[in-house]
Every structure is written in structure tokens, then in C-alpha cells.
Image (cartoon, rainbow, N blue to C red; front, side, top):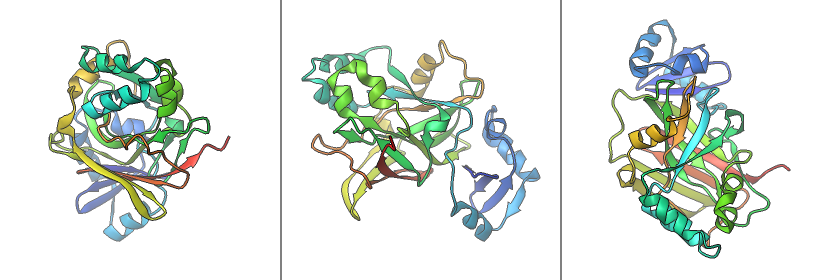
Length: 283
């Protein structure tokens, strides 16, 4: 089933059935066996007709996050490794990405606090001091406070490749800024884990024309989810859980950079489509 976060309520989409529930997001989602808990929650929720549910979902959908932090894994796919090596070769940092791809310890970095996360149909930002900016579509895990995967959503890890390529130590500036992360449109809470054949698709639209489009299966990832979770949670406790972006294999060619008013559409089987408009930050 899917959870959509609205300003006044949470919509539970269980196939052909819809329910509205007025619950704190963290209290609702930070549980063990979340799918079974939500199945029981439906008995106390308000049933909605499909028309009523669609009318509510046609409004503003908030990112499916409460007080959780967003973390990210890098260089988990071969394409990401190659892209990072290409962007960093002039600075002499290319070998770092080759090494981390083969290393036992993965690359993990803090991405965003919840108030900086964009939701479906909201704006994501590109930095004014970067001339090479790309979106990175990523399957994103929702972990509860027991470090267990309880759901999935779509993540957009906005990245300033010119800044990261200049020096690997500039990673925080390249990755962490206002509206540099988007999550949505929902939190998928399945009864069983996603299948390895699950496909991620990304399309970038400019002036009503597709300027980039590609797809990849999550089976192409080098590291297991349990491996990434183990390293992330070794020295951290997340009292309300956290979100973990698992890396990307879809990287536009080196001569491509995002422009203001571009639309980024990221789709993942079973979850839906996260759509965001690109804009320069307001500062």
C-alpha cells in the first residue's frame, strides 16, 4: 500500500481502497511490520471514495517525511563510478572514486534535513555558483528506528558536478544545499521487498521536449541494501528512522547541464512518478 502525506491528513492507498487518517507521520510510520500495522489502521480510518481520494491527491502532496534525516550512498553503480572519475580527473581525484567502488566501506554522506526536502511537483534548486548540474534518480529506503526497511520512495539527489569535480572535499557543497533533495510522491509499504527487476526511469523535459531519457534495473547495484544499512547505522541511532538514497546508475552525458524551468520526472515500478521543476535558488 501507499501513504500520501497531505497538510491535514494521510491518505492510505490500498489498491482500489482509499482511507484518510489523521495521525502524526512519525508515529504512523516508525514501526516494526509496518505493512501489517497499516492493515489494522484501516479499520479506524475514514473510508474515501475514489473520486474523493483523487480530488485530495490532486492538491499539494508533501514529501513523505516527518522528522527523519535523509542520507545517501554514492558510487554504488558502475555508471556512477565512471561519471565521478570523469568529472574529477583534472583535479587528480579520479582514483578516489575507483577505490571506493571496490572498497569494503561504502561512500555514505548526509544529504538533507526534512525542512529542505522538496516533494512531488515542488521546485528543486540548482546552485548559482555551479555551471554543471544534474539530477540523480535513486531508489530510497525508509528505515525505522530498528534499522529495518519498512518502505520505499523515489529520491532525487540533485548534484553540482562542477563543484564536486573541482575537489572531492567539496562534496558537501555539491550535494547539500537548499532543495537539493526531493522525495515522493508517496511512501510505498509493500508486504514483500521490491523485486530485483524493479526499474528506475528518468526523463528530463525542456521546452516540452525530452532532452534525456533512460532506465535501469536496481539489480545493477554493486552493494546490497543490508550492507549500506549496516555501515550507516554502526555509529548512528535514528529515533524516528531515516531515509537512505541508494545511489544512481542514470547520469546524463558530460555535455548536459540542467537549466531553469526543466522538469525532472523519475519513475520507479510500484511507487509512481516524482516530478520536479528546476529553478535557481532564490538567493
